[in-house]
Length: 464
Image (cartoon, rainbow, N blue to C red; front, side, top):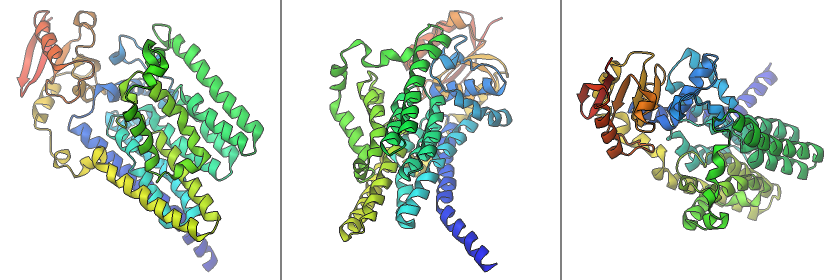
């Protein structure tokens, strides 16, 4: 009996630390994301887009996203059928908050394999430090503070795959990597192929080659066949993002300081230990496509683009530290201590620059001063209506109406029943405030009349 109790206690101790991180990080990320949404600081691009898709999945319909254009099937934009897994939860809780909490849980779940591996290989103290480095990292913080994205599924899959790889469980590494093919079309070549190469290099040659070939082939099929097949233009829209017609070398040499800063910070949060493990090579394809991409948003550390890099570099850090520990030398033990302290310190220093800092900002806990006017205006819009709205107001409506982004498409082409505009929004995707106000004035000459105006919030209804 005592032996059984001891086994249970040992299992609880072993699992308590990683489980604690999953619970704590889920709560942390959810708090930030939900509070931002309640303060009307989320946007149609991208939370509204994904809610429209998942709302359709929950109703057993194709993911038609009016925000992207009339009748636009989101599977023609990016290949992410894995989003259907959120649909059952959305069917029960039809609100954008469901997406935000799901993303928070997925990001937090990645801590489980990383912290568990670190605890087995390096001890509980280092495992706690590893959990903090991952959980508070800039890549995850930036993604948490910027709506919802499909890459939330990629982060735990990468964490489980690379943790298995680092511990020699090569079949499990492949099994966890292959579902990445359902998350986004580039991940087959930018992640699965690299993991396959490492699996082959570490002894399972046939398994590794098969994994890599499947990854490359899947990305090729998704980009050249499946996406163009569903896309209304019959093409893959994101080819133009790579160099945009300019020579690739010219784009690669643009904003070199910013790109170098992104690279250095990505490695610095591991105390640069990540460079001592081959696992870090899995990050290179993602960094490469970002740095040759012609969209400046790809180059820096904002938004969600670095989230997939965080489990890769943290896994590389763990493997490097575990290898040092096996050498069992005084110099190695000292190196582990110095590296862990540096990694935690650098991670903590970066917090004020990203969304986790908002937890201590009083404004996060205060109601939006224009919330009363916003909710009063939105309450006048009936369920099932067609609405054209400012970016920040879109996700306040997507659970119950058909919504488009005001100013993005010609008004006479979409003819919504309602228009609602917030000129003070901090979110204005592709539609500037000046243009929005001009379009608002023009709408009143095309059969729309003002039915509500307060604190800058304007609601118009189309005349019968």
